[in-house]
Image 1 (cartoon, helix red, strand yellow):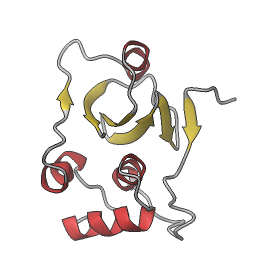
Image 2: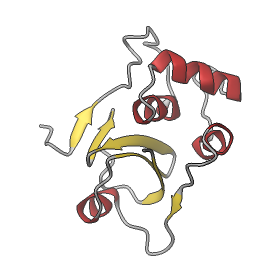
Image 3: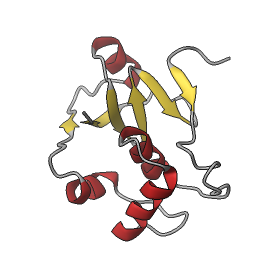
Image 4: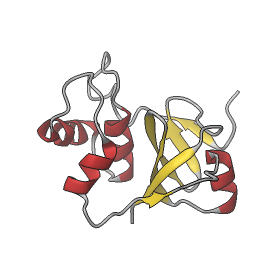
Length: 127
């Protein structure tokens, strides 16, 4: 059963026809945070060098595409996602955990799985 802290969301992937796409958390997170269609975000990442079904550095992409949005770095002790969301209101952000990024809007995780127990590495706050 899902609770109010998680909304299963593919960022528009299936609606765009990318049913078999994998390793696309960067595309989904950016599409949701930047309020873009999955197709548009997919094209932006492809122009950045991301191949179909291949991983891509969200941090590297953001340095090129959104240089004014600097990530908040977390050092030891790094909080878990659920702790961060209890202490801070994230209106529109992308959180990076080990091997994954996802969008959070109004402290609701928009992703394909629950990552609340993961340790936060970086947060990009979108306006």
